[in-house]
Image (cartoon, rainbow, N blue to C red; front, top):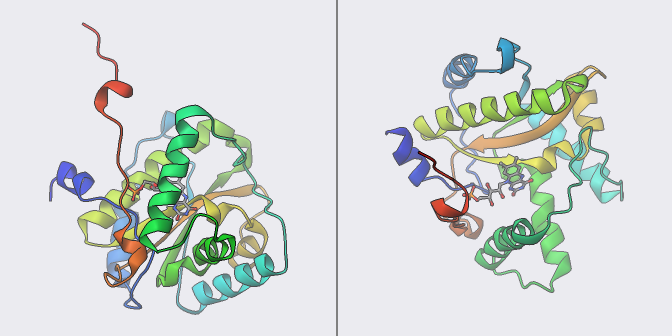
Length: 220
Ligand SMILES: Cc1cc2nc3c(=O)[nH]c(=O)nc-3n(C[C@H](O)[C@H](O)[C@H](O)COP(=O)(O)O)c2cc1C
């Protein structure tokens, strides 16, 4: 498929089948993604891919921590309070997800349970954490963002489904502990990946994009 076709057919997948992605294919995707551009070729991404028992251990530790009432302690600034159109779009995407899952707006408990699915990696067979040395701040996060989208496009090109998850940077402690991530490295976000469970209601979620004129300004 062309890149435009991949983008046209994109949507985030939030329910996966158990079937794993072939190990060699995973290796080849992350090998190709090494070609991503970065500022001064610094290549700041530190990428942790977990599957099998390690992935299960991560999900168990995260869910236990969250159910114990722990507060999020992200290593980067994920606390932006969206304003104006950004806030509207944020609500729009949440509404799209909850209405496809048949969850009413006022059903706080069902929404919390749906949110918890993030830390169960939506039952995906694999999860990747995108990290970098903390001191790099916004400079590094730009590069890691570009790198992560490169990974996503490579996945899509190989019929692998995924969901980016800021939620996976919210409780870094058990993840860093289990994966042995050094203190000076911070987790920015993560992504669950595998093959979509097409029978799951969550995967009927679709979002829309603004028209070109609202975001892109051309000059001659
Ligand atoms: C950096 C980033 C973080 C995201 N975090 C989450 C998340 O924690 N949980 C989730 O379900 N979706 C998350 N998403 C997916 C977005 O909600 C989704 O991309 C957006 O609503 C547009 O929908 P679409 O991807 O289906 O087109 C994230 C996406 C990005 C790029």
